[in-house]
Amino acid sequence: CGYSWSEEPTLGVEDSGSDGGPFEVPYLAPSAWTARLDARLAATGESSLAARRVAADEPALFYNALWWACRLRLPPPFRADGRRHLIVALRQPGGSGGATG
Image (cartoon, rainbow, N blue to C red; front, side, top):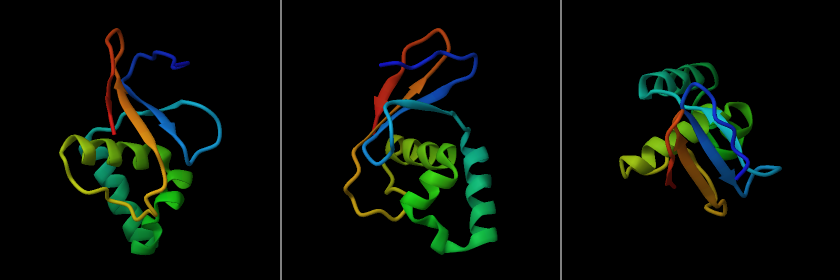
């Protein structure tokens, strides 16, 4: 798949809406990505929650929020048109990742 292993957990991502092939973003604990989301809402308002905009501005926030929503069987937190195909997998150092998404 072309993923590199790091010392910290990451999310391996394949997104039909992004340019290029598979890539990684840092794994964020729920408290970290919710703090980023709260800061984004406070700074730019609810209109900044369009999926394309969040994915472009803050990919770690976008993919972590989607991973957690899927894992907990919650609706996605961002507005989108439903045309993206995503595969997001947690990658842990020295272990295997499980695909979710």
